[in-house]
Length: 442
Image (tube, one colour):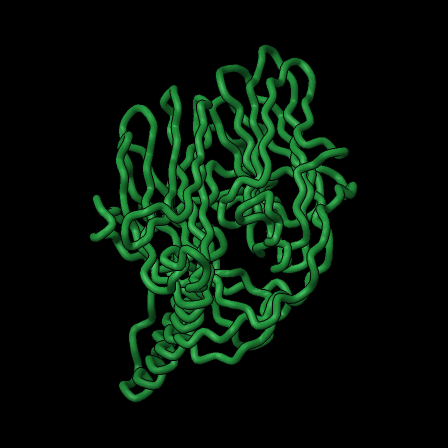
């Protein structure tokens, strides 16, 4: 009598598919065009082959086309978007901001054409008058330009038309040279708070992290920035004409102090180093020409540093948004001109301890109860009391933290599909037993 081999074949096939599915989500993320690509990290970099192709900035987000006037502004939910803008072009967008909420908006343009590149973001009221403006600009050869805005729907103050809840319109204006360039837009919504949490605190100090240097591969953009797991010394290299991005995650109560070291070589290497917060607001910037000896950017006596991430630290009047948001903080290093590849080292000191964040008021659309939150701001759930470091995602997606799960489906997909396959194999076994002997699989 022939053995009933089909159940074994089904089980083997199921296990093979499940094993494959278990690997894929952790290995890749998707770019703006849906292509799979690697996501660098300090842990995985030693296993990667040597990098041969130069880093390039690949915009990421949901495609969108801004309107030519405020009346027809395109409505956007919290999330990430990509548009294109020609020189001197103005586009309009809108976002719904409930009463008591604060919206954070950032724009990023990328250009490799010589000359000035500038991006103006502007919040306008219902009469078209300007409420708030921010401008980013650069004259570097390879330019990554950011601008950011923050405003709250409080419906109070002398100019209530700029703080009323509901539909808010903003514009993006590009001033540059050359052909149209990508425009990345990021939108976060933060609920009102019932309890602001711990008091204000001071700028962090750099603390020597110790340990041996760890190789890491920086990305070419914010979206695929190389992940640094925390305090430590990290090494990479950088070619002329590249931007190398790295990111460090901070939760409520944590602070960051960081410096970059670019190696010397033949010829001058005009270099710039920038630090950004989770909404891509530039917190610090330093530039210098590196010659034959290593140059330390933001040296240990004066590193790029933040205060602990606390709601009340937003009262800093020197910065519009300031460093009070949990999430990814970015360090970007750019070397302009032409010449040999230079060594690059990143020294990271993460200070403070994770703590409970502010208590956000309930979001009516979530039917949730209020609890003190440790999550990143966005259109977030405020129910429950997650462990420190847990993060919810804003509606519309967040490629910077969603990673491969967002590219290939959420947790429900990856848990449900293998379960369905296993159940299917069991059903097949039952059916075969009813039908009798089958031919062995080959």
